[in-house]
Length: 334
Ligand code: UT7
Image (cartoon, rainbow, N blue to C red; front, side, top):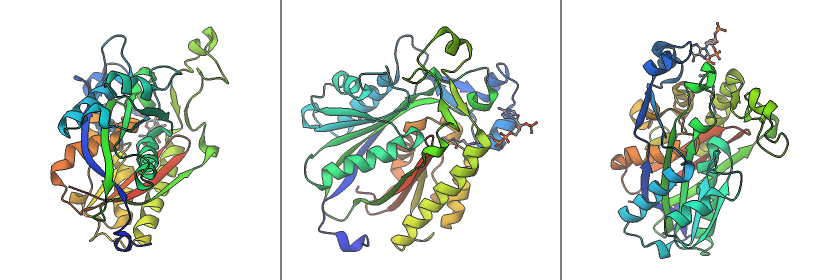
């Protein structure tokens, strides 16, 4: 079904966006003092110049997510009791259980259904699509999707292959019904479990619970086969975005903005090239935050919100551990 033929349908529109990043800036120069790396390598291979790190003791992902959610409520003039449902996309929950979404909802003064969704770097897109279904059916009126990760809690700062890539942050959006034809028009989400051990944290779950050996072997940190993940990311993010664009007759001229997951500037460029987009249509903030996993896309929406006009065609795209990937076509609603 084309976007224009769905005008009477209730669609889930993003009606507000807010984000939070910690104050501490970990620069490429500081990383040079920690591992055998250099600013030039990191910038040219990834596009990253600095990332934020949550340094406060005893706080986790929910600390940042709660700041994003509270800010979102205030910015959109929404009372906590109006929220029906909160979805937290994260790969770094505060605890193995219960759900970090429950903690965020409680800390934000919400009294609603909440749960977590795990799709690694594609988590925000999966959460956005999940939340949209509840709006489209009319089950819920106001939903918050928050993507947040304290990646520094699972990064080995002695492993140059991963420690230069990731940062901490949180971003949240408010979803509400729209009957003007704006909002989430369509999506393609995919998974392939064959890639599960190409980018993962081996221990700490039910298969390899924490033991002195798993800790000594540094198995509670992210391990990535960078080149394999890169290859899959380039292909799948571009393929899915192009498939979705083609389905809706979108071209480089009619797409207003690409909002990509920020893992590597070269992956972003490949997707943009495939869609035939000029560089000013490709939203990039990887230099400032690195890869914040579930927070990259909402933080990007936050940073570039002023550019968007009602009715703009946005393509959101992500690829991550799992493997998980996908693309969302949405029309901006304000
Ligand atoms: O968001 C979730 C999905 N994750 C991703 O999308 C990440 C996908 N992967 C990537 O972005 C890239 O593969 C990386 C940025 C991780 C690595 O870039 P690459 O161009 O694939 O580099 P490489 O792994 O092929 O390594 C090239 C060289 C190697 O040295 P030799 O063997 O050629 O001598 C590495 O040891 O670069 C070396 N290297 C580094 N050098 C300086 C690897 N990491 C570093 C580093 N600093 N931090």
